[in-house]
Length: 423
Image (tube, rainbow, N blue to C red; front, top):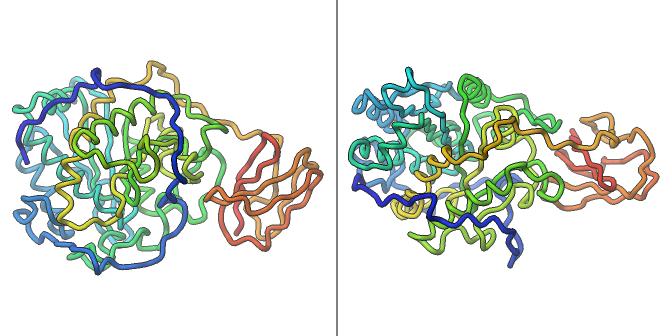
């Protein structure tokens, strides 16, 4: 668990950013729609009720064990690790973050990096990966040169569990009944302020308010949010396809993703292949997702954040966790070092603009939507899975949405588009 590891120098890995061909239909994005409620009775989910029982990293921690582990990191490494309380969940569970930094960081500020995981409560592979990453970095300081250099030059923040109420829905002693949503049954990854004008369907949740306050008090330059349900690196934007509005750093993102995937495949050649061959994709090219954290962080905080979907199953058998760590360990560490390889531009990321000539009102609406002027082209309306659900001829001024279910839709007319919410 704490053996020094081979440093995979970033400069030696190819950074080809060429586009890739899709050789099969895209796997449905777990974020795209609500899954059916189910428990994981068929899975071997072993729980650790003590810190010692986590020593082989083949169990999920109970909530109390999680708290004990986080406290233990700070107690064992008081000069390197501090535990911040980001906030509390709806049900009062703690949202914690391990802050790993060299003792001189206060006098000599370092760039800030942020990992967080499991904002969808049943996607718990990343939960254990992040706990093990904290443990590995701290125990490797002074003996592993890569880890030592990172801690000496980067302030590393790791939040293993963003949605504790969802993860421990069945009680603090098990993750067997974990759910995607928080205690208010809200998807936290549809609940962030959207820089592109889409209002969340639900009021801002307590967990997200705490997270927004926390990141607002820092200057994170690079981050990643860990999910499960597929294996793919998902880079911004989520709100648009790359043909509509590519992220200004899209070539850099592709190179970063390729390095991550190539490194992981050095240890497990079958990983990151269930969505496409490359193992990475622009978020909107998979499915357009509104009100997500990734776009929020990139735009509002000028922080380059991506979404890492790291396991095809959301809750993997606990005995498989060491295998995932073996595949991901080096890539997760190397991604932190990418903070020293950011694009040279220091300007804030600009908003991809939705053309203002397409104006719809009222928005949100219950049934009818009115255009400010007659459409010059046919109108197409897409749902969040990218499916066209309505096609209207040019010249249309009124759109009847009463047959469509509640949700968020993209209205497109020629090269112009806007998003609407049907209540």
